[in-house]
Image (tube, rainbow over all chains, first blue to last red):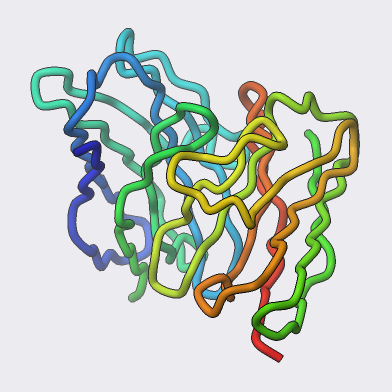
Length: 116
Length: 109
């Protein structure tokens, strides 16, 4: 079945970087754009950016420009989201989501905690 | 950037009642690119409605979406116990236009 499986929870110190993975299965990886969305504790959904798994092109929300990098590995059908210069406000659940008729398939989420 | 404002913030209803959730955009949104999601505690969001009014695969027909321009509505015709959750609208036209509303919490009265 179509699914996105994300990497496990992370705990990082302020100033560090985190890299979250999202492995796709059950469909043609290169045929659908992938997005990253985050959700701080008790808060709403915040769109971070998009990657085209076919060519690797990306577009990021202005808020994250310069701090986020999205990449993909077509050999393993995996997309990655790396966020640098972490601060406490980056503590959140990070989701990957496939775009087909809006965001139709979501990963299970990865909790990233930033704490000294 | 288009800002989506959802109302009410919290809606208290009983099972069997009708729920009407609103999403208002700061500028016109193409109806082709307005979606609604349901999120339960500890779970990822689930796509309910895309294109303002089309139900996603497997979504019961008690969920319906309507609207155009700047005003959109999600209606749940007859609430089931499993429908109590947080609902988000989203416009997904093109980068950087993938914004979400702040959410409406639908709680049991």
